[in-house]
Image (cartoon, rainbow, N blue to C red; front, side, top):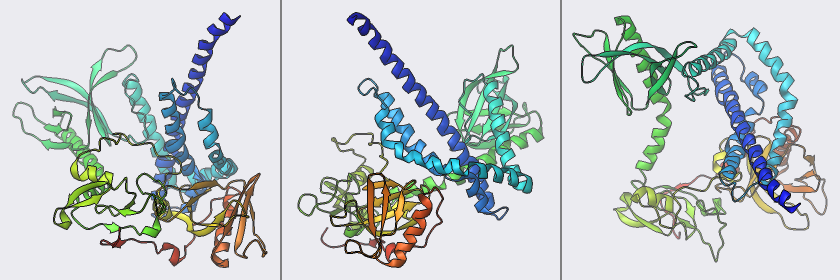
Length: 505
């Protein structure tokens, strides 16, 4: 009997692994579809609505909180599942992940509630607006073309991605570099890459094999002249340079224009990344903007809470962040200070010197669900500001920085200070009861309470006006409605940084 049980155990473990693997594959496919809805359909319709073609509210009504759902699955659930599956031998379970993130699945209540209305709006505006209908049709047509190319390549290349936009495809001649021979190839130009393909034998239609992928980044196109081979041009990229011969002068011009336009658009979209690189290049060359001590309650690098005795505040002289002694125990020469050695944080030390601390792991720890910077979400929030908070009315309240982000408008984030890099906790608001606490000995008149089962949160605002503003937003969020952005108090937003070097840090 025991031998039979011993035989069954490996079979049971294998079955559990297969179930978990299937769940991971399903989640990956789901995130791809959410990306399509959020970053392709919704983004393009929002851009067009910004031109006044149709109301922005129509787009919001159709997509509801799809953005929040996409963020949750792509940034938290999927990465956690992938990490766990890679560690399955030591941790063969996923139930703890699902249990931890389960409260955030309540956001689906709003999506389901809005589904019928979204379908009605979609149908109505596809009939009412030619431009609206054209955008939907263009996206669907692009995906259809991607599937056709996917089949043409025998399913060997993973190109069915909504971020891939087909620009141009067709047969062309490639000139050999060492002799005068030429061969017929097939080019497929996307917005981000060029596929150089060669024919392969097939009994079911025309098929090709990808010989080389050439990225659009750094790509150049040049018209060439060849007495023996007319209509030639050159495409050079980081991976390969191709000498090409078109079938006619018009065909050559069409290809060159397609390449030039693709390269131009790609470069424009990468300006943001260049700006970020420029900031790194200027690190240490000019005095940073400093974060005030009272704007953070924890180290902006390791996220450990500050303590007057054991973990004091220090400033990185390169980036201006407030960090602890451990994270500022580095020195690098800064050009703006006459190349003198200054105290810097570990990240700036690595950027400025190119050396990684021996004790530091090369790959950083994955960001947790609370590790979203307060300043980042406050700048794009439905409402943010200070409130007094407690989960036990017998204990004193703590002053916290509260934020309801636009991208996650059904969740309340609580921070110790406006510049903290990690939230103390989050409250998924959907399903909570909101109670306006009446004047009593226990609570000031500007108090209110959130209650759900055994979970109770007490809040107190500075004024009655601020309290009503928070209640107006939260009362919508708890029933699954997307609250509108509120205008915060000037005092709440007066948390900027001073430029220069303050004393005593």
